[in-house]
Image (cartoon, rainbow, N blue to C red; front, top):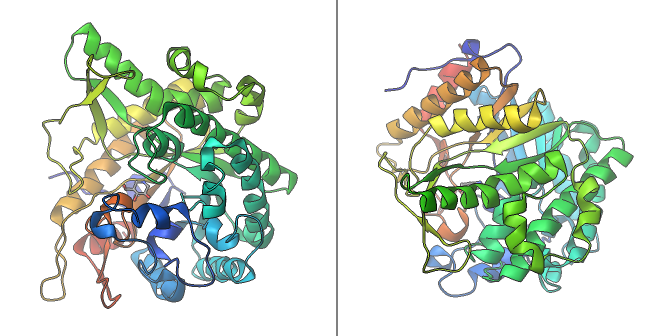
Length: 442
Ligand code: IFM
């Protein structure tokens, strides 16, 4: 059993928060939200578990006050949420007044509870109109992201604590355009290479736009993994480097060094957009903080029978979450130390997501989730160990407040510290919620 951590074990001012994302909780059928590429992806057979979608989700659109009461009651300092591009601009162009008014009310409600609003501008709800022009494979989408940025920031920017441009660019690009697991479900190396660049361009353009509006505390959220080779064989060690290059270095090198890692670029070069080099200074404009989402490590073997990147995922030997992800807290510490030493120096880091899916069930009005509690404390210990090694880690956000729409896995995988009955929308705080409350209030 991991040691329990409390607020006082962390430096003064350390921010504890919990995170959510628009499409996963709001209910996209509410408030004149436009269609997004996740609606079509879910409507296509076999893409999403039980063909579920985000139309109703947790109905947070109507229940946000109740949900924020829970965040406050738990003792968190901050609330991380995202704005849906399809809600703000249903056709990718024209502003939906009702959409912006919702975020205006939401941010007021966050502030009214003395919570710090941590905004993410893009957590994957791309308007269908932009999916129709090729989505992130098209440079135009990156340019249009500036319109979304401006609309949101002009509405709520005066009350926001921190802004992230993009959540998990690897998922937006590689997972969605190369591996085909997320919308739009493509498996196309040319589209993927373009998306890998355009999503970073969108980040740079958005930072630039926000600086012109005078907004401060700007960052981006990367989902990083600690890459491990399946064996000591040189071929597996090289495979590990390829995983690391695509998953981690592509984004870290671009944002903090203004270049793409040569080993990966060599393979993607022929598919990259023309003159991509000209965008690198914009992509690497200094930011004010970096968010890291961490869930598990990645173990790979070389798979010579497959085309580049010729990777085969190998199952690790540690316990797994409901997602089948290996529980490996040490990876969080190692990543934080590596990122801080090799890329960010003293720039503030935040763990913007960390959490565990469990097959939770309500019994006598109680959800008992001891493995999630262990997961939380072991990752808090890893975060604390990174601070001890000199990492300027300033906050930790649990993913997620509520059970929600877990993308291709539908509603089956439950990450929340609050159980949601998707039939009745009843919220029931789990044992892990109570444990967080104890830690944060002592
Ligand atoms: O639910 C997702 C979230 O949208 C992005 N980061 C990972 C979470 C768990 O899979």
